[in-house]
Length: 244
Image (cartoon, rainbow, N blue to C red; front, side, top):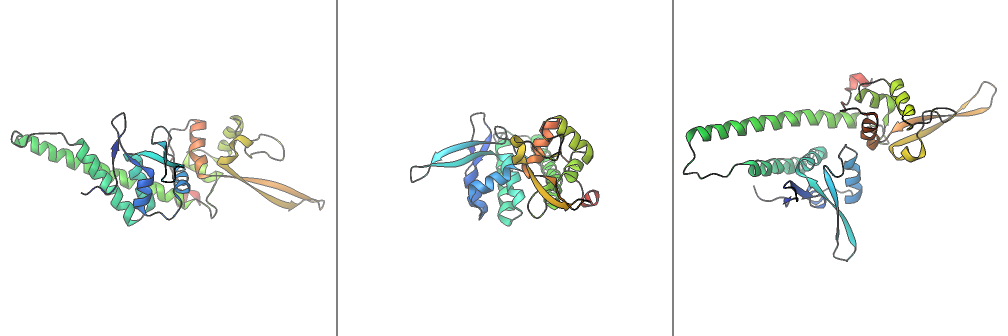
């Protein structure tokens, strides 16, 4: 397979690609920095899945790029749900296979070694297919429960974490993420506001005066933030039937 996207090795021996090179190959119309920021919301971790790389553009000004692990590059390709994305993912899988293939002299390899290599390749292929089947429904499920403005209600997030909405609110109040008392109860403190959206609703009280209530929604970045903050090990997006 020809080199669709240049692959480099990091200092610790991992295979990695340029985020900009991947963005260009995928033919994403969105500006690179905006696209990558949105992709981070799928739960990728800086320092583990990618690092920032500020090179220089032809004009001499710094240009933001990212060094992305091959695992993250495969998931980014899959998330796009385009033919270019599928092509990139197959390419990365093939590159991984070549990197893992042991060096050998074809004149000395035995029949049993050939059979073992074939068995290993088939086992790896089946494992990759199983992983793909596991990831695709989860990516679809995340998108399924986004509202029209790209946020989640707290009940859906609670189901993802395997708890109830009331318990999730309680834990977030106990950890100092949400305000515990007063008119702004269950809304985030300012330092955590970027992970949430608060919507105000006016209503008329029994005495005819206008009152205001607030509903807290979770941004995509807030899901992984809440998981880490509360110590949950994993996130399982609910099925549409669960969220109904």
